[in-house]
Each structure stands twice: as structure tokens, then as C-alpha cells.
Image (cartoon, rainbow, N blue to C red):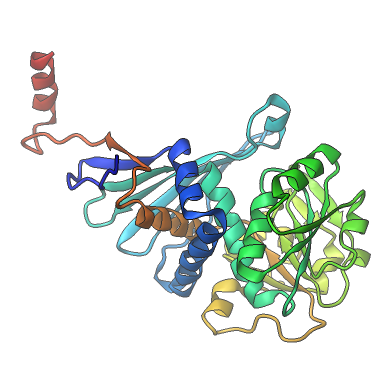
Length: 352
């Protein structure tokens, strides 16, 4: 049965995991990524309208729990997300999340949604949007180093937006590479499973690093990155967690989402606080150059920013009318007299 979004503002649409998967499959994964990317790109063009702040993070020895808030003045959104690399050893997800959109004028929520799957989609869509401006023209081959939960989404996004159809896969766990290759079979890719990161980058015009370990790692060394390559560095996303050797950064043109956050969490935490970077919204809006020539090494130091989650929630909300892919939650108290919340409780007791 088709459900229409409620007219009662006290009822909030909720997209659970099952409905998110059904919505994605109904829209089609590649089409979902293309449409979501459009929302991400549009919101980067509106960058100056948004409230911006580095995410609020609570770090522990095991991982991190974060809140990522923003607002465009009309709608407020936030995501709750964790990052616990050790979780996979316990059969749990490394990253989980949920998100909320609310009206600024009343403060009332208008959407609750799962964001474990949606975060993977928005991260991949953002990577591909940025690569439209930074990757070599007509790039068709991408290396993916780190073949965990995010890898297939990255591959599908780059195929949907840029036409990338050749993949070179590597993970220190061969079973992860086999899993990624199996999941992408029949999706229009020519896939090579590699036995080292050095082998994976051979002939790749785009290198995506998307590893999960919470440490300063060297996934790419300087001699592995040739002229003209675009690096999509996704895995380094918190203090003390990096993937690239510092020398790569020193010869790359570096593009970031929000410098105050990226300097704390991204690859550029290895560099001086005044090292020059370009904000990607400036490239998308035409205020700054992206790729200038064929030999330029470009680096997207991706850590994820709240506007991207806002875009993803905004996109999902736009797809719900006329579908059955949400539930209505009675989330907000609605006393007859807004000043008489206690009386509402008493009436419930009488009705029981």
C-alpha cells in the first residue's frame, strides 16, 4: 500500500534499514547515486548559506562517536555516526549512523532516517562529484585500495558519474577483495584482483584509498603516484588516522571540504596549519580552478562533512511521496493546550 507523508506535523516519517534498501533498489543503485550526487553538488554551490562547524567528536581508544550538524536557514539537519574499526572482528559494522531533518521555523523534525547505508552512498556520490572536476579527462581505470564496506559504493558511483569501468582491487585481506569482486560481478566492470597496493595502482588514472584502520598508515608511498593521477583519499577521517605518505601531499594540489575540520582529521594533519588547500565548493561554483593540466596530481582529502549528509537526507525526503518506503512515527507530544503537557499525561492515565 502506498503511504503519503503525513499532514499532521506531530507525525514524523521514518526510513528504516529495510525501507532504505527497498527505496535504493526501486530507484536503481546507479540512478540513486546520480540523483544523490546532484543534490550534493547543488548544496556545495549553496555553500555560503550553510552553518558550518567541525563535527563534535567523542574519541575513545576503540573508536569515535560524532555528531555532524548544519542548516541552510530553512532546514536543520544532523547525523549521528560512529567509527569503530575493531567492530568487524566482532561481527559488527565499522560505521553506523542515523540522521534527522527539522524545520528551522518550528524546530519540528520532518524526517528520521537510517544512515549506515545512506552514508556509504553519500560518501561515494561526493567522491564522484569531486572527481568530475579533478580527475583526468575520460579516466576509465580506478584502483581501490581497501575493499571493505565502502568499496563497492565507490566503484558504482564512479561508473555512474564518470564512466569508470576498469577496477584494480587490493586489500590486505584477500577475502575482502574476493567479496568486492564478487559483489561487482555483472555490473559492467573489468576487474583485476591484485596482490599488492603497488600492483593495484599500475595504469590507474584514479586511486581511491578507503581503508578502516585507526592509525597513521602509509597505504600509498610517493613512488606509487605518477603524474596526472587523481587521488580520492577517503579512509583518513579522524585525528591520528592517515593513509598517504607526506611526500605525496607536498607535490599534490589538495582539495578539501571544510579546512578547519580537514586539518584536524584529514591527510593534511601531517602538514603545517597554513599549507595551501582549495575548498571544493569554490571549484564547483567556478570560483577556483580544479584540474588545470594533464600532469597535475590532484588529491581530494575527503573526511565527510555535514552538508553532504544534509544533501542525502534532503534527497531521500524528496523521494518518499507516493511510496511505501517509510513509517509514520508518533514522535512529538501534541497536548490540546501547548502549556498543559502534564494534563496530557493525566488524560492518558484516565484512558488506560
